[in-house]
Length: 125
Ligand SMILES: [Zn+2]
Figure 1 (cartoon, rainbow, N blue to C red):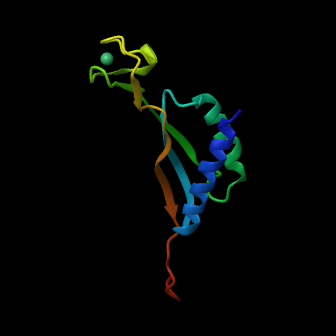
Figure 2 (cartoon, rainbow, N blue to C red; figure 1 turned 90 degrees about the vertical axis):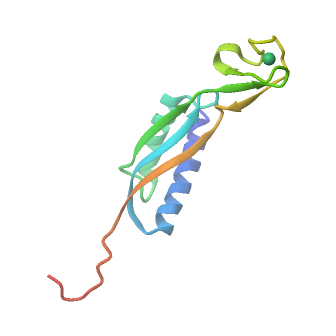
C-alpha cells in the first residue's frame, strides 16, 4: 500500500518540526485529504498508527482527516462541478475540456504540540 510511504513522509516532516521547535511531543496531526486523491483514509489511518511508534515525538499522536471535496472546472462553459459524480465530462455542457481545481491534495493542515516548561531558574520550589 502506498499510503505507508506518504505517512512516513508526513511523520518525518512533523518529527523534524517538533525537534526544531523543541516540542515535548505531538498530540495531534490534522491532514487535509482530497476525496479524489489516491489516499484510502482507512489505510492511511492504519499506516499512521503503525508508523508513529517509530517516531521520536508522535508515538501518542492522534490523526484527524478533513476530507476535501473534489471540484472540476470546465474551460468550455466556466462552470465547476463535483468531480466524484461526473469525472472529466462537464455535466453542464458535455465538454471534456476540464481540469481538477481541488480535491487531490494530501497536506498537513495543523499540528498540535505540547511544549516542555522551560524553567531554568535555580532553586525554585
Ligand atoms: Zn461545461
